[in-house]
Image (cartoon, helix red, strand yellow):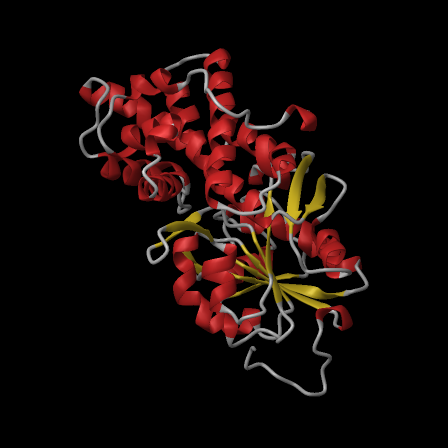
Length: 387
């Protein structure tokens, strides 16, 4: 249990006004604060103020948190978009999380381990979480991939801490601009908290559905970033929509097969939710992973006749140049997926993921991406009964 205790307070989330803290303030964190902040102002079960933990940076001699709280705009990560005035930027993690009943995690997962002890000691004992983090971990002991929501987050809180995920076809800049999009909340908080949590995220232009398949939704959110690297390679080769459509078909097949291989209880219908095929399509036509992979492919072709011998340095350079302080997740997910598949000696059964990893990190020629966009034999990714 959380050390934050107060005998005078109710101890279940259903009896409390939700006190919301967004852990992270990058592009997607700032974008989701638009919906969450507006909803908190009118939902009767929420406190109006939404804290947003901001890693403090200096922008032209002024603290980023001061800029956000004064201008109600994240000028670095979501410039030009006004944030709700009830979203308050807080540089102290413990102050941002103090007494929170709902944590929204939206930051690169490699930063989580050092943050979790502080978060655990600050929140309310009935706190629950929703992860918007798209990545996988690898359990070195059990030699299996694991879900960020259940390992880095839930296991580092307390034994009965419940964490769901929000995954979907959501490009942050488009969502922030008010363009219509969908997302999928996967959680098992139970009634009435599943619906209550869905309402905190749902809006006219951001429609949120609910499923209970946390593993399927979260794994899709990570793996689609791997396939998006392949889509970027296709774009860097100036190939057309036909080639990319074939890549998406093979990609969703391998994503579904990976999920069935490693995670119990995955629902085939999940792949037809926004967190599944829709997110894959959006990421393969937009988003940072596709963008950086296109730049990677073009640089490889320009500098060394299709092969780059120091790929990690090139990825780091592209990330620094194109992402304005944000981090790539597809390259990390590609490494994690390959380690997992090697651990069960099945990497060759996933030719597209294998090819993307070899192009990304092992000097394989980028033109070879087309060799593994092929007819995949075996079970269909999605049964016909769901079409």
